[in-house]
Amino acid sequence: MNFKEILLVSLFQFSTTFALNCSELKDIFTKEYGLTFKEYMVSIPNYRLFGEEKVFGEETFCTENSDGEITNLDLCFNQEFSPEIIFDIPTLETLKFSFCKLSSLPDKFDNLPNLRKLDIEYTNLSSVPESIFTLKNLENLSFVVNGITSIPDKFDTLPNLKELVLTENEIGTFPDSLFSVKGLEKLDLRYCEIASLNDKLEKIDTFTNLKTLIISGNEYDTLPNAVFKLSNLEDLELHSTKLSSIPDNFIAFPNLKILYINANGLDAVPESIFDLSNLEQLNIGNFNVTSIPDKFNDLPKLKYVSIYRSAITSIPDSLNTLEDLEVVSITDNEDLDAVVLTNPKLVECNYYGSKSVCKPKDNVVCGNSFSLCNDASEPLEPLTDANDTNDEQDEVQKSHVKIINDKETSDEEKKINDEESEVENEKDDNEVPIETVKELKISEDGRCGKDFGVCREGFCCSILGWCGNSETHCKISKGCQSEFGHCIKDAEKYEEENISKDGRCGEGFGRCGKGTCCSRLGWCGTSDAYCGTGCQSKYGQCK
Image (cartoon, rainbow, N blue to C red; front, side, top):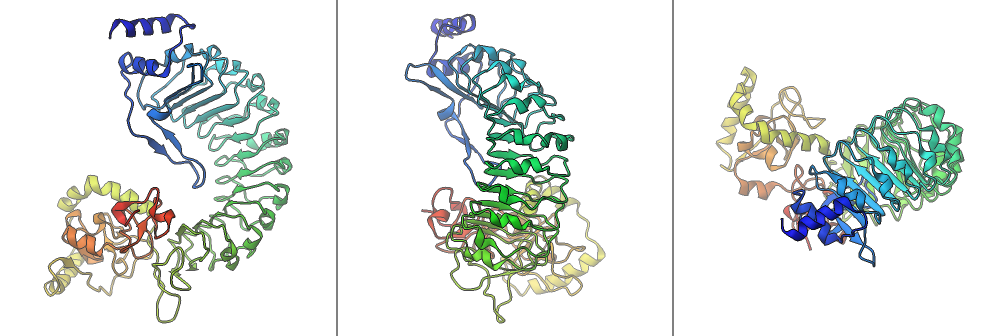
């Protein structure tokens, strides 16, 4: 370290009047603290499909105002360092610690009187510094996925607070002083293990300016009437709770744009949902229902809908009337005979886990790879859940060699292999076709093997017993089980045959056909939404 750098560090540590610019601060972080700055950006998806992504990297590390004073710091290095130096920058307005290896922070936030936004996300922080509650100008406070078990009940000292996010912290109790913050616009308490939330919700109408309320993943079993007095709400998320019923009074939210009430114990879809003419996102999955009101034409602005894990047998016709619908996820409905939607703006459609899937006509916007719905063409059965496929692929890389060496073949399996080998001798050397085994049924849940059945035609049974058509599933060198599915010997043949059969693409699903693009979310298509930003060139054509 040269004399200038030593002087800068020394002055910064012992004086709050010596100002640094971003370039000088970066030098100190790099040479004094040993931090590294990546040239590329790291993208972290939002919780929901819609909404902005958080982007971290060198470009957002530090910004200055017109006077050359540091106003914003985004410290997301995933490294260990002492942040003491930061608390001598009184001009700071925004401070983010994300994906940093921090177990504690200096209790010196009173040195940052101009701070308006504080994000401490995905760290090992276990306690909240009390000096945070001296920040009179603080507007946004976020603690996401830390190890916090309690939080000071001093929110009455933060009169300008507008957003509070405490996602996935086991805080246990609800801070009563929060009700004194009259200007609160966003409250996110998802997965905070708040057992006594029922009583606290009785007072929630105190927040007359509230626009976003997220209280998912907590153990409350009733929704008080006070919630329905929040007439300015735009985002309401109540999923994964112990609710067994919800008051059918959603008409009280004329401005609501986002509604997530999935994964509760509800046995009916509240009809008043269809009074929400401004609704853009709706998740009503995991309901104990056999039908859904055919009133989606009353939701003209709907862009995203998810209906999963229910007992429905058909898709409401009115969904096809939505001109702005972009994403539909209708999955894990085992009794559903799905006819793909034909909305003009669809860019993503997902129907896996349905009884059958077909398309009503050729050249549909999304799902064009499915068979036509007619007597001459039997609908394709969908693939298994993508999560199952991805999970087992991760395991394959670690375990397939050992399993191949250790695997014992039962007498029954030997008999099947002997029968199959006679057929293989007559086939192309590059392929190992599936032999029809009467004793084994077609797999219904994506599992394959002696106890589960064979994969449907054209799909391979991986070494861990899952159907798919990725290289991990299909190559014999990866442990593909030819007695329960299709297998391929060489990479060239794999590329030739690994074409998506249901419109999905990517690892575990295959490539799109000639002239077709694989979108960032893994669906085949030809529009700019598929072929532009995020297009996966490994699995299809890109612009």
